[in-house]
Length: 270
View 1: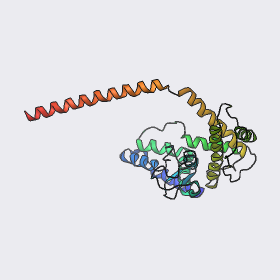
View 2 (view 1 turned 180 degrees about the vertical axis):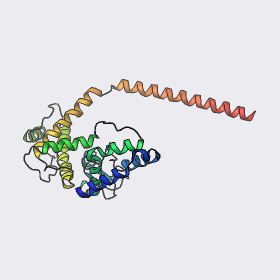
View 3 (view 1 turned 45 degrees about the horizontal axis):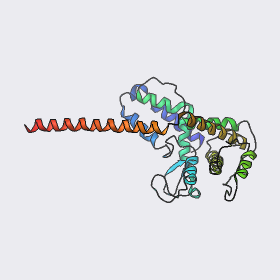
View 4 (view 1 turned 120 degrees about the vertical axis):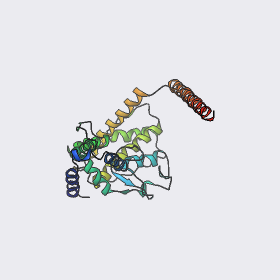
């Protein structure tokens, strides 16, 4: 789908949506939510970012499926468990074009507000769209161009070798990371490059991707994950107590429902 076609469809849909009319059809909102759900990645459950399909036709974000197959050492689709490989991935430009409509001028928020009969609000954008815009802004600053990049051969490399790879890319790393952790984080950086190139081919980004931008973006995202993990990681004891209390509450609720059903049956029999 070209940008001109996406713009035409966007304008057409906005002409169809009338606030006074759609109030009469609340089921339309549920239908629209179902349609939106078809545009979500089965791994991250956010809107597809650079959608890529496996041979089984299931579609995922480029970054999500690459990480799933490689980091989990999996040869199967996460949905149907059919055979899958990173070499099977095929870009889905038509889906990318549809998602471009959702990003365009807050279309999704306007449409959902109209279908629900509510006054349009101004919530924050979807996380994927925000990431795409942040990357595009970084690309606009220029830098060295990206080419298709495959994972290096990590077998036989030592920790200092991987650290040198991080240093060469101007990427920060935690000195406490083990060899496996260093490799995993470096793989994520390469996957980010591959996902960006997939997105650029599908015209998700307006500016040509640059290596410096991906380096900055990857570092920011890594820092965010580490801060969130460090701040929210629950203690094992807390998790055990929470599960214990939840189980006790569920048993009490079950007993209450059981007693009510027995009492009702007794009344009906008498």
